[in-house]
Image (tube, rainbow, N blue to C red; front, top):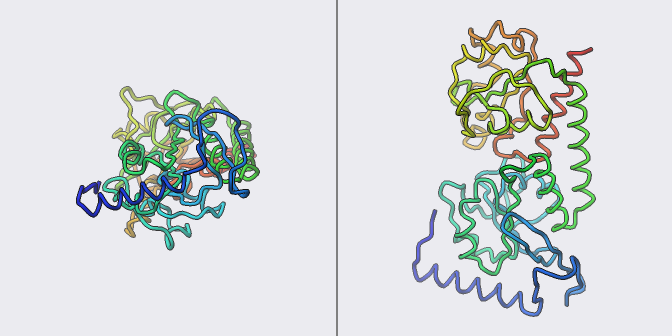
Length: 335
């Protein structure tokens, strides 16, 4: 993370803070009062929202936006929201932002000084960038920093919907947000109706040519599907983790669990797309694993893959697509 305290950086921070302070003069927002009020600029208003970082009063529409949360990139792109800067290095390759937006880098070594240079009035943080929230607040104290990452202990589906709802309010896309949520709820209903609870389900993550275990509930990306859809786990491993590559469980243990369905996150499909590298697709790994050939899910071709860019997206729309794929496969199996 680049946070050099040189004279030039000090000048950048001071100048950005002055500019943001001047732009805020006269608005005097507070965290209480009506949810929408007229501003001196007849085209603007304010809304109140509560994120993981507290309550905020935001002048809408925001003019200078920085986006750091993977779950919001495609949503904002589809809504036509302009960005001044963002974590472009983490964006899926099919977004227009890849061409036009200042890249502050990925979460491993971001250049947070570029956020200051963008003079943001709104910064959308979350997921991989949550660890930098305190640093960002110090560097851009006059910007509103929001974070709607799903919170531990909360209903995962409701947390994803909360994020879309609040993004819709902030960017004047309430109708579009409502459609996103309705599509998600419809996909959940379809998958639940198609699923036979007597059938056992296993989640796996393929990464680096290996097939790893994704635990129900907390396994990366795949795990929440067990709770949202009420799936019956084929295997529970003590001490399982949220590791982004899954847990190292032998394919023999997976075979012994004999799942009727396997749900797959192909991590390499996303990571390799970002880095321009080749990889072994998940379907080949599963098909070519000798230990899995007699597993019900493999024999009956009852394997459902998450969308290609899930690992760098994980948005509400991604789960809508995934749950519809599950419903398609299970409805076909019943026919």
